[in-house]
Every structure is written in C-alpha cells, then in structure tokens.
Length: 96
Figure 1 (cartoon, one colour):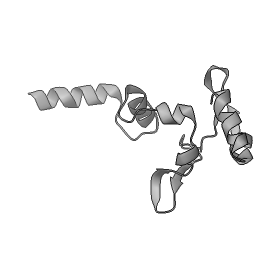
Figure 2 (cartoon, rainbow, N blue to C red):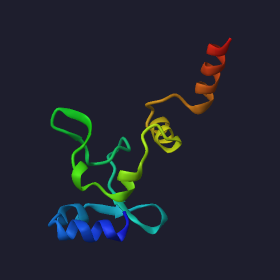
Figure 3 (tube, one colour):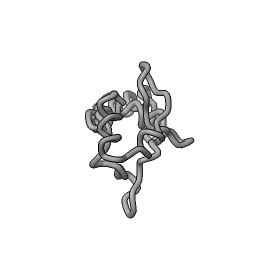
C-alpha cells in the first residue's frame, strides 16, 4: 500500500487497517492474506466475495482490474482456474 493510503486511514481513524498491514511486494506494505491466499478483508455479511472495507480500500486494490492477466494469475494460484496450459488446450479443442 502506498504511504498515501496509510496516511488517509490514519486521518479516517482506521488505525486497525494500518496495524493490520504486513510486509508486501516491492518494499510496500500490504494487507495480510489468509492461508488460502485470499485477502483478510475479502468477504462481508451475506457476500463471500465482497470487500469488507470497500469504501476505504487501498489504491492497490482500487487499481486491481477484474479479468486482468494479474487477476487470472491469482485465480490460477488459488486453484480457482486451471493452469494456463490447460486453458490453452481447452481453447484449441473448442476451435476444432
């Protein structure tokens, strides 16, 4: 998370979000992950795939594009999509 997000959360009184950050990639802080790799803020009452802090989510989350190559990579890593090679074989099968 960029430092601007951390400052914004402090201004909003969301010290809980700041204290819940862990070391992330590229020298920035990040939200912690559950053992299955999902974000600790994923899931809200009645909506298991909704962000529980959507209105206050960080820039990194805000910029994450659904259906992007990065999204599919995370889904493959979590076992939610078949490996890329399997998808390629399936697409070729459909073409024929």
